[in-house]
Length: 632
Image 1 (cartoon, rainbow, N blue to C red):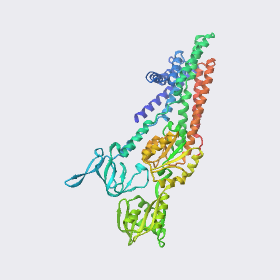
Image 2 (cartoon, rainbow, N blue to C red; image 1 turned 30 degrees about the vertical axis):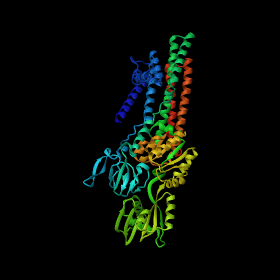
Image 3 (cartoon, rainbow, N blue to C red; image 1 turned 90 degrees about the vertical axis):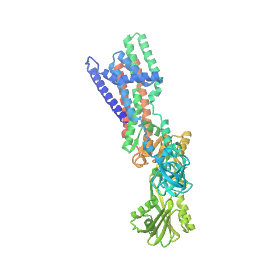
Image 4 (cartoon, rainbow, N blue to C red; image 1 turned 120 degrees about the horizontal axis):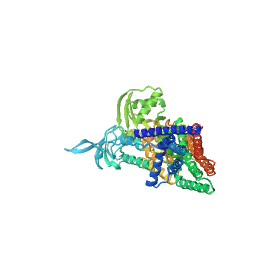
């Protein structure tokens, strides 16, 4: 990476030097002074010879007629008739274009080091010795299907497996994006790379090595990256036509001018002038200068666009797929409902009692309840006894009250009576996509505390604005169906795909693309990385999103402000329109200049200046993008 940066800086410095010598050559030309050696030779050597080398190698080895070939022909022809300034001018303009394109189009290689670092390096294998199960720490690569493994609290699960013993809660956010740890028990599956939060479990290895879910995630990111082709200059796409057309017009100009009685040198000057003004320098600058200005504009608004290709493609997007957790929502659980089933107990009393019981809990739900109680100014009571059953719930003695807090199954297994009104309240909360903690005292369920991820207040407005811009919205999430439907309804998204693993998000995006849609994916988690890569454009939540998601994406929202999405869409569309306008303007200038060259109204020097003026006009028009006002 550092070598590429140093190479770019070296190339930039050399181009600046060649430009200085070109200016000196122009000054001498305008004042009528001469030196033994024209300073434009330096420009030709620095900026021109690499161009000739590029044109020749493309022609011979790649059978590619590029714009570099036409410019090389014009440059050599100008040198042939002694017009050094004209030769240096076309070479310098193309060198500037190449630098601008390198700055805006070339995308840095997306490193997979962070994603690879998530892969567990070892595991605890259980082996039978002398009639006892003994733990052996072995490299993850040596784990085979069918091996029995033990995973302790806080450890990463080394392979895909099935629990054969124990209960726990597993943080699966790397795979599903869900903000809540999932309670797991015997016969349930666990995934490689996910975190065992609490209880010790024994698992049987099912998928190992390349077949594991994490390795498949890594491979999908690699494959999607390889499918991305760098943006090719529009002028190079047209070069196969421009080169022969320019040569035909130049040759025809020479013979027609000579045929009507003009001096051969006059005819040759007109032919060379045609080649000089025909050089597509302004055309070559049309795209990179517009993109550079737009990227600068976006950066001022906290939107980091990594490549010109991404900006161009964003302007063509007609479907935006949102992840839920951390994108449409904040990805942070907060207490949303407190329901007391005991008329003698207020909501505050229930919250204080539950928070006191959960004060020693390490579970995210318990921590969220305790934080909410403290923020509400409630005083907590010290527990006389505390027990945690991993993946199920807790028992605590608070001021003589025997409290059970946890899931419905946990309370039932503890001999707690659950009445119909409790089931009714639970079903209502689940329909709203909320997680619930039941609270029981003296064998009776006395209340429920619900927690929910909080919706971003601007989410609904953004979906409405995108709809007004004829852009469809889709929700792709690893959350359960009820949660996904609830949040989608809140923001006005009707197309919902829920309970998706990373590969299923990818397949859903591929289906949309196969239906002719240009898809933009917006996400923030590791599990979103393959989808961000697969989509036509990937947008990551920059400040709270995972580093891997940011690396995988083409665009990053540094303030996690999804209200910038409509702004980004308008900026991209405006950039495409500016590029089209610049291309049209440059072609019109070239047409007029070629006509004037054929008629002998321009010579190589004045032709080069007109040609340069066209390039300057394109750059100035592109620069206007930088300060243009867009609704944000």
